[in-house]
Image 1 (cartoon, one colour):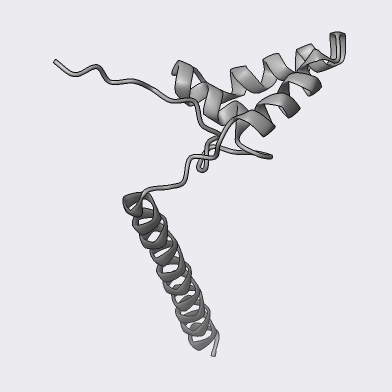
Image 2: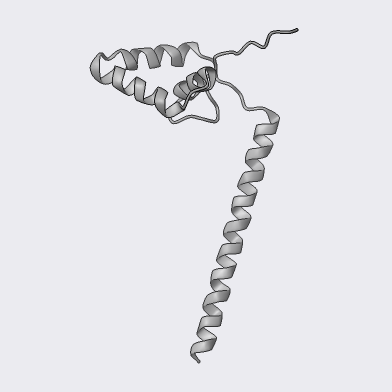
Length: 103
């Protein structure tokens, strides 16, 4: 039976600045907000959080999204655009019917 090894990468999908906290959260399977809060607390009380974040930023490679993730993002973007277009058309239609009723 082959062992599945996890690798530590900066997240390409769950990122606020550079994906360090998101990558740690994915690796340890915890909520990324928890990791971010820990870094903020370490930064305020000892300054260690900033130094650790910069060190991890330099040492951790970025996890490039897979072809599937790229296609999923493109698909989601297309759905968003089409739904916005549909919503705008419906608003125009509703406004035009409302104007016709007033006359």
